[in-house]
Image: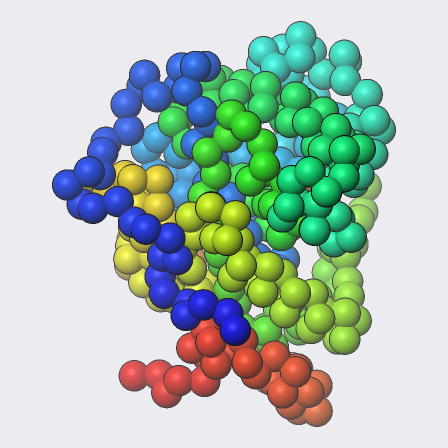
Length: 341
């Protein structure tokens, strides 16, 4: 049976031990503090990434696991609007981490990542030593990504790197990387809303001159993957990684409280005025150098915070019922069947 979904599922540092972020935290000799936003896609991870980025000391960079495919190889738009390879921020990161992106074979990196972050390798991630060949690939992957996260920390000047890769298996991979001190913000959204979003067709406005539709999924596929991802993130504290549970609906309705929980995950208490970018029903957001993610990562200024519940009207009743039944144990666990006040 899964553990009770308390807000923090690992021992939390007492308030007296909480600290303010110091510039010296960014030294290369320190482990890189990484806040990993995990959950099924279309759950609001891009919004949470950008809101965390607005907190002093935090640098949100989007879905780092896609840096080789969408960044180095495809050269798609950074969240600042520039193409990845033309973005000054990412150019400096590449120079500091590897001596330039041109020294990296993105195809090799994509293959290396796929060779460790797949569901079939979960037993090897949970029990080191089961496969020498897998452990060798995992060590090679660590050699590549640690300089990347260190460079992101250094170039951004932040103390905490926010990675909204979402993928559950990649989180288990990062949990095994020496040099990273990872915590997980487990972001959950109502399964029916997520399924509706995955079955809906819309296009990306952030791919330059090309027109690229957002990926879609079947009702069955979206339902199974929602359940699988959330179960895996429920279990990630068994690896020693601290986790906090955040519901998308609570994030947009009570952003100060939910962001405060996420920030305290790394032992930091937001100071007075550090969440002043949150206004009544909105967040004032600037430019963030994000990779991949929802097209809304390009929005600037006052971004409304409201629950997107279009699914309640447009998701067919039969589909809604099927998804509700199939995911009911987790919906109960995350409080979606409780009466709203």
